[in-house]
Length: 412
Image 1: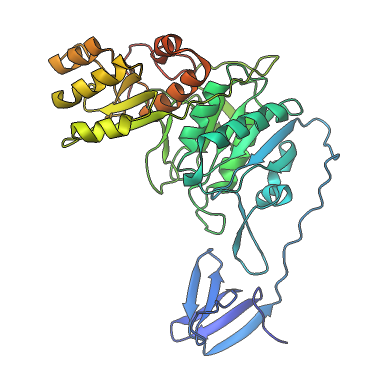
Image 2: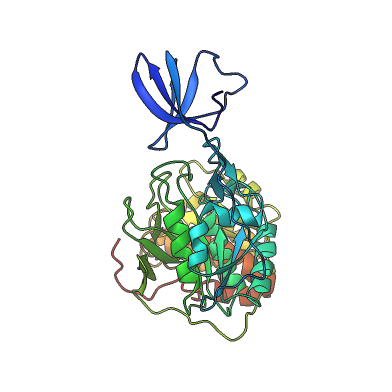
């Protein structure tokens, strides 16, 4: 019987005897080498001395799904795909990972979620995380509002690199929600034995069944499969490039956790409302500027050119060099709004301690307390899109969606 890609085989080589799924040969690969997907999920290249067929492979059949199918006793949850590592599934014929290009593929990636809820799945985008744009946030928010007319909650699989931006954007766009909106991602793809996709998505669906009326992010809480953490959408930040517990709530405790079948909340949260209200205008003429030694006046002027507002990531308590203060003063005098956050991330901006801070306050810089710079950037875009300048400036330093905490010590 002919051995084909997708078959489970035993390969004898100089390195030893290995078993796994025979992978397709790449058109540029060495003809002497075969690629096996081992039982632990990793691929290995071997020069075979002998290949023995263990069993013929077969593509995993997708379960037929009908939009009208409903399991009694389970709520309807909408899953809106946007792309990212989590939106992929393994082709069991070849062992390769494919992006979920259809609603069926999205559910097929973790079919067990249908044991938690009746799933209404759709694909809105299929983009890389870094390709996210403000215009996509608007489209996503409108889709969420549409889905909440039919479902009790919404889950949004999303690329991890910009998920914090997207969760903040939808947090501000929805002053009122009739159900939870839960962003979820994966640090490692579903073909890896250490993938976090399965647990994260299952946990996100469980949170989407709660009585929350907020936008949240649900991701692994540790490097092990202990539990997932529920982060407020305006407080969460990706803090590591590859760890499964990369997401942390900054200057705030997480909202809660999902452990097994239990969803446990640590602190109060906003309950869902009768009505979903959407304010989706965004002014994209806002800059997020990282101050650094050597930033010249003309460089800052160029960054601010044509902008209506800016968030500065200042040093320490919220400082910039004295030489660029006149540039900021002129920008504010011409009608721009400038908010000051800190590169430190943890802790609170205070412009009253040093002379530089007092100068910044005097020219009209708005201190942003302990708000994350990325959240402040999104918030100012949203404020300028929905309010006049004076109203936007007043609301910038006011807590609207849990983005600013009261003055108390936060453990970090």
